[in-house]
Amino acid sequence: MATTGNRACTLDRVTAFVLPLLQQHTQHQQQLESDEPRRPFFLAISGIQGSGKSTLASALRDALAHTSHPGRPHVACVSIDDFYLKKDDLDALSRACPGNRLVSVRGPPGTHDVQLAARTMEALAESSTSWPGEASRAMPKYDKGAFGGRGDRRPSTEWDPITAPVDVVILEGWCLGFQPLSAGELETAIAEATRAHAAGPPSCRGRPGPAALQQHASEHLRSMNHALAGYSRDGGGVTAFTEKVNWDAFVHLDTDDLQNVYTWRWEQEVKLRATTGNGMAEEEVQRFIDNYMPAYYLYIDRLRRGVVPRGRQLRLVLDSHRTITEVEVI
Image 1 (spheres, one colour):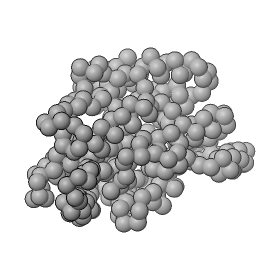
Image 2: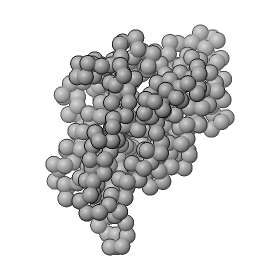
Image 3: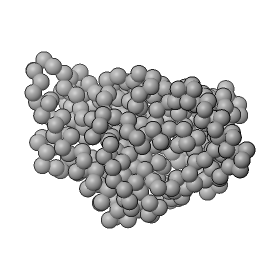
Image 4: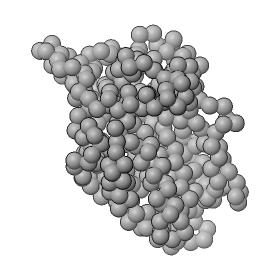
């Protein structure tokens, strides 16, 4: 489990990275002419399941709200998890794609409501100019514990209100920064996985090796890759859902062993069951994470090389105890 010391260290590292970029952004906004639109500072936090990205986002929001930074910025935290398809829509998608495990559970690209995400991010981007004074908008919320861990979007009456103007937007999610492969790159990856699997594949638990792809039909992998293209503003860039968002800073919580995904995700489920009384059994968590592994195998290496302008991406590598073992500014 993550210790308080580990969380504090991670927060300190991220805060030290973000604050100078936020200061540059603020200075630029202050130099704009009165008729030029202002925009929030957009920060992405990407991290494997259980790495602590949601906890980090909340802690960073609180830290920024109490910083000496001018104006004490108003920070909105958003999770890509809150954009999952509603249960009925996910069930319909699963029925329409029989045998495709990548859309049988929430999580992999293709199981998010891209239009809802785009509307939400666009509203946040325009909060300084288009919202009436002191107006608020409701941010979607998803209940992961509903229907025995199947999950469902909460009624709009239970969504969290956000008041304008918003100075900083933090979007966190497990697949932020994943970029679709070209058709040729995808076919090469599938072919290499097939050859490696025939030669004796490693377990898909641990580093997601060829077996992670071999569990899924090629057409299902192609469908996931196509869906991922719809998560970015231009069909091939970084997840933003709309052209109105450009990432001012990007934080990637990585790990030295992707086996930790299984362990950390089960820890999350234990907490969820203790809090709500609902959730998945351990075997269900394992099968659940198995459906994420192809995306790690296909997309995480490119994310590790950097997906935003140089100097704006921070990569923190965590060991099994979530202790930072490597720090890299890309």
